[in-house]
Amino acid sequence: MKQQKLDLGIAASQPILFPVGPQIAAGVRALDALAGPNWRERVKRKHPIASYTSCVLCQVFGGDYAYGCEMLGIDPKSKEPAQLGFNVIERDSPHADREFEALTHGWELVIKNPSLQSIKRLKIAA
Image (cartoon, rainbow, N blue to C red):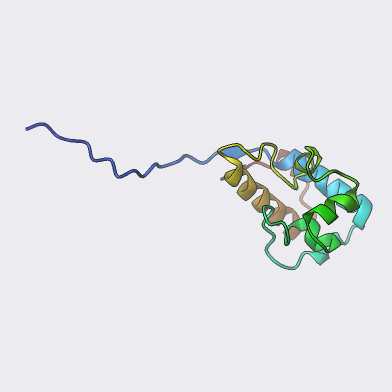
């Protein structure tokens, strides 16, 4: 009797390591320069980066994502927000959701640990 393979359609996806540190470090520098060193105190709730109305920029500056980008002097539709850790590089990537998750976790770490010294080396698996 030949054994048949049972495919349940469940793909065990391996975590991807996203080097989010350089982007988040740049975003922290931008926020420190424009919003002052106490901007972290304005972030009061979990802040999914993918949310247009509750991301880090929304909580720091009020308004929505586009307004936060405007306050930073960057175009929300350009690559600049991604270079500062406020968006993913390729929104159409099959891994964009996982990169958003990695960015969110990275920002949570940076906000909870303001003295984190090695932000640039931060890598998050998602």
